Image (tube, rainbow, N blue to C red; front, side):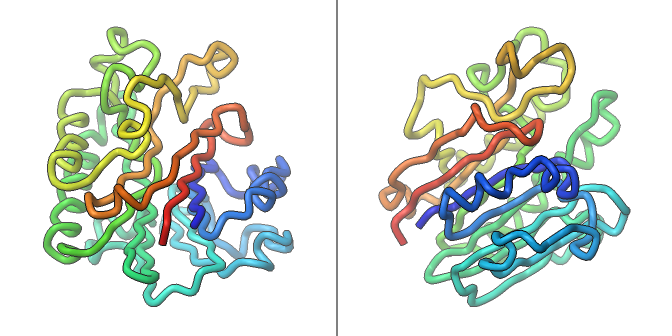
Length: 253
């Protein structure tokens, strides 16, 4: 099974860039998007991709902000929007889907902001989601994917020393992600490629992408029992269309 993840940073603009053709060519079974920034009725959904796949949308209440979408040709046995907590669910941050013996969560983690104004909200979201995973979904085979808005280790961003006080690499944010990795989840890319430097996000400023001054903040995490089923995970850092790039996980289901 092939799972494709991409933070599109605005679905309307993303569609206009023609990247749905590239996605269709990948022949993925499930596709997860973050930062759709709108409602489905606002998007032109006449592309073949949307005709072939069943789609589920969880937009934020605030117009033009946040939101996630999961589209699939795999029949789901269950679809849940959010995690039952209005403070987070109003921002359209999670779609949970179930198929076979797998529970997949498509997540857009909060951005702590350059002025750190939402760092506490971000950490609280990390904590609340972890409790939800362990208390409500404990014992299930889980795949987490999306934009985590946190670079975990120094290898995961181009300039760690310069960004120690930047949201996305703050100690408390990295510790929040540590909790997942020490609590039964595996960062598949780092598991497969412990020394490989690849990024998934580049600021639009300063020609960062051309110079490959980036951050790895988009992930696939899987629960321990799924590690042996994973074939590969590829970061397509040469594919543009957003300030993020797509990731594809191949896993045996």
